[in-house]
Image 1: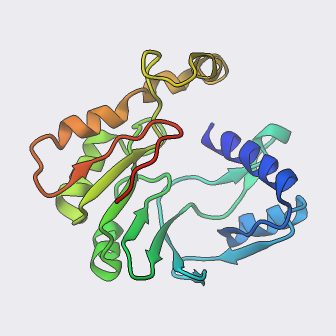
Image 2 (image 1 turned 90 degrees about the vertical axis):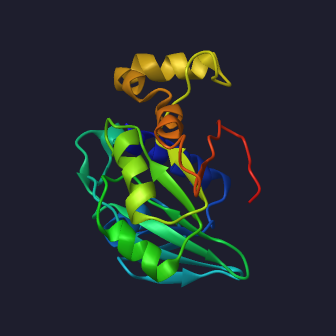
Length: 206
């Protein structure tokens, strides 16, 4: 389901800005190149790409990875990955990507020292709030954690029509509603790390 959404977004991006740089796992980069993306930079675990003011490094995640569900049978798209984003003279962000909890999170913290983590926490196709909370308390040492791969309730959704459309197309979305709030509850007694729950389109300055 998540792959479907990402593919749709990527296709819109390609049409709007065909020269936009896309960083991708090696196998997925090859697929995207054949799909008409003009500026794809392949990476694999440990590889980095330097922007003017930020370095992006691909790190391990544990999850399936495929492409082409909208076109029929999905094909293998390499191993799933997360990213470490090191902003020059500023904070470092760890984006877990879709993943289960894993001991590599401790290595990522020790080596890159992120102060912000974006952690999947839906519990359906990734680790859930319980596992994400364990990662925050035992594997990471961040100031802020932003839950991802979750969906709002009908009451808090910016667009109820969009949410209802997702629920009709992918009923499993119902199992991932407000898991970000659950993670916040799990970490309610945590004094080191603040849970920042962001709605769609919301911004936060750190």
